[in-house]
Amino acid sequence: MVSIPTVAIDGVPNPLPEGLAVLDVREPHEWEAGHIAGAVHIPLSELPARLDEVPTEQTLVVCKAGGRSGQAVAWLSQQGRDVVNLDGGMLDWAGAGRPMESSTGQPPHVA
Image (cartoon, rainbow, N blue to C red; front, side):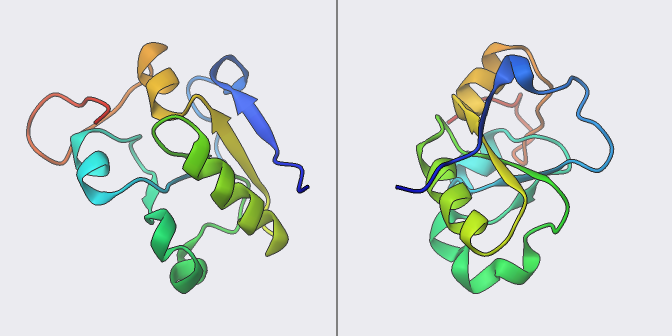
């Protein structure tokens, strides 16, 4: 069993510190509805083919609730990346009142 580095929302500095990247592995419609500003968007299914687009610095990996990002963190860790899963995902991010933006022109929300 691979150990998955995980952090709860209360363990994530607000605002995010310099040098911490964010990778969002949700599907495009989820991303468009609401995401963390400055995050890199690579759906989980595309991750192996787009590994070169994953930030090389320490990276917080997010999805809706933490399951897909956990899978991504397990795989990325095996590739030698410095990654951590956000337990509770974007649901906890939004629930904590953290800033989000949308690509739709509508107020951001977690889809």
